[in-house]
Length: 189
Image (tube, rainbow, N blue to C red; front, side):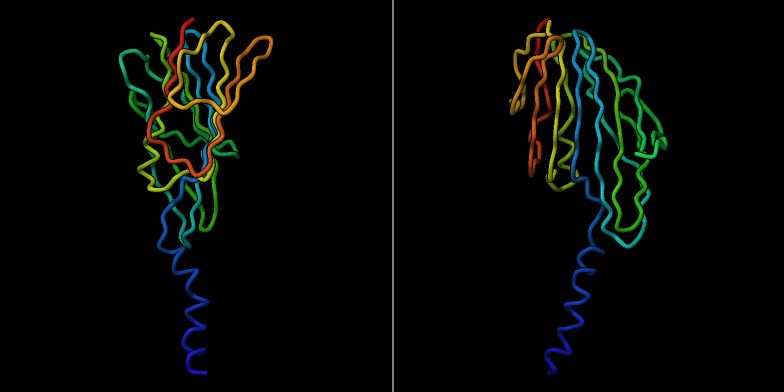
């Protein structure tokens, strides 16, 4: 009986102890890319959760590819699903994003931008995910291209693709995904 009196409170409190010590989790992303001969558009939903008993308010850095073969990212937007704007500042290298999550809650941010392409290469930065210290539970990527574009290579081979009358569509579905390289598309017009 003494053993039960000792362990019962521990069993009840243990799950809360674990959750209190965890940080924000970036656990999923669903992104649609659109590629034309001279522009690359990104529009994604990014999923975060707060497993703590305290609200979290912080800033995130959302990086853009910054190479001479790309123009500056423009038309940058960030909002939550209620339409509240979350974009703080944009530079040529990144955007600063406000992230506020209530205790034991989740939030989805819709983030997008457009970037001019000067050569037959488009890029989306994935490797910063390592900084979160955990793989995505799930990641979905869709690429839509004009039919005049010929893909030479992908850094990640698509899971499937199909052709419509006007567009080529490529799909990736990842589980437990911790990217080792960025998402790069090499193409010809």
